[in-house]
Image (cartoon, rainbow over all chains, first blue to last red; front, side, top):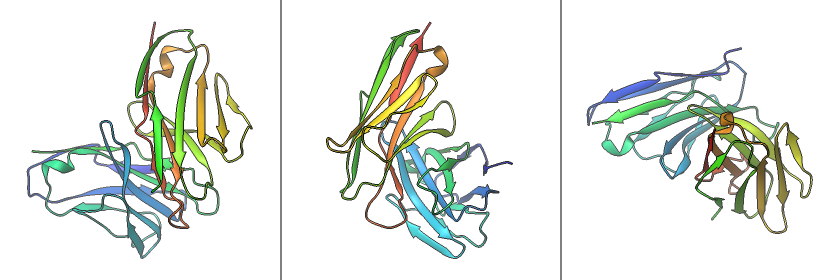
Length: 113
Length: 113
């Protein structure tokens, strides 16, 4: 059972480049989310999804897009990377109706130069 | 606005010491409080608390919730170097029915040999 899988683990971008962070889970979880983690600020919610075709914004959505075409996958797109998006990104999922316990992927460390 | 505040932000202890971490919260309709441990990568789930006064235990770790005073404590007894990590507290936001987790900034614990 792989759980929540994120790729890539590390990425360096130049300002203005675009890229997609991949997230997949094999636990049939309806709820999936993306967080970013910055020093001293904890985890902040970027976007979330409660099922295929349903997404919504979190606390810090600007500069990021998401889509959910399948239950398993929830990619995060940076359309035009900025240095302020340098961070560690975590994907997390959970089964709805079974409490708020989230299962996290191992993270993507992104640097934007 | 929902808020989660952890204290202290960091601490250094010697092996064998006891550590007490605090998490205070402000939410309109409390549902649960979760504790996570984060070493180098993904946060891993420790406890979920929903009722006041009932201590949850897992080995040397224990946690208790006070819904009247709006805080939770995480205790680690007989600390080991493997307990060195960032400990995160999280509470579901009450502005929607999906229970998006709001995290505190975390407490960094360093256990020295």
